[in-house]
Image: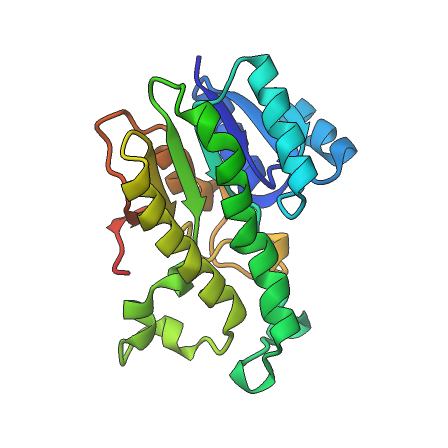
Length: 236
């Protein structure tokens, strides 16, 4: 039985990914900052739950200890993320109004949280016969696409969120090289309607979670150190 942990799993893409992986036969630990919200979400889909706040060392360490006591971990999905630059009415904080505080807040969850969770759970993953890490990134993280003259992502004015996800992409590459026995990839789920964007995305969570769930089920011969959408590899 494959044991999977999904951070930020009580709603949105995390919850739908958990649902799809439970259906695929995984034992899924759906993590949430709020333990009660996590329990309610897990009960809906037959998952397990663990309290985990990716911004807190003690919380992450306690979650790792809990999973170790329960038997270990095979798959980690780093899904927890925030986008505080997205305001009401689709307003975005652009470069002219960017502050260090906004950048720091975004990176604390989206980047430092990923590193914190990887540090705590990689020792468990390395004991698995088929360890996998999926880092949920974004199409906005692609520097090649953002720089392209006609790229739709070039019209996006925000800085903090794309920069944080570009950092996640680099983390993915470096960790994949450092841990060649673990399949570690970044995925772009697409512009999905979730609370993160005020439900303004163009696709459903069912559609967005497909690539996350697919990459969470890689075998030992699967790709590593890559950046993928549902259609295939993306340019960095």
